[in-house]
Image (cartoon, rainbow, N blue to C red):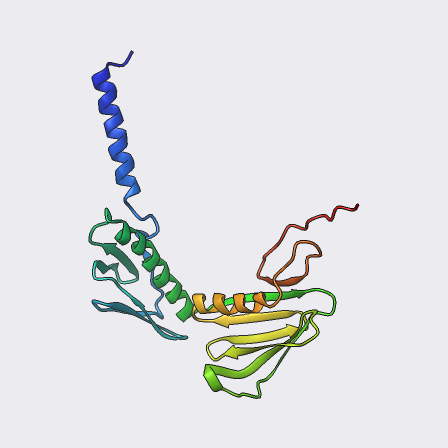
Length: 213
């Protein structure tokens, strides 16, 4: 039988250990490998990422500090990880910096698939040209409606249409790429009865069975 004093000490030790582990961002504390082709330039308010595909920047909060323990390794720390906001932004900012490095070196690509009888897509010149920050091209889609669906392509998005039912989007900014892919998908979201719609990447849905009367 364990004495109460010993049991109380063990419980307090476990609780202290649990709290210490909970107040660390496992994502934020992970070092980032910096490719040779990337140049990082930190400042008190942001970090600039320059690579073969361009230059971008990620804002830094006043309580964040960038470190370079090795020439090809970057670390990010916060002043007080016990503060919830700092701990949350620690992991978020580390992810944004990592995504920016990947975007400036490799870029991001996502395919979209049009699934449905008669669904088709064509990439064509946009009569409105490059107005409103567009690239001068648009998607012309047949999605089972009584009308065609036109989607202007933003200038920061590269697009290919290798077949009548497939769209390939590329961008150096993962967030902007996801927003545009979601916009295209919104014109015909996948439905669970016939499995028709616009699918992003490896997206799958569970087909529901229709009960017959």
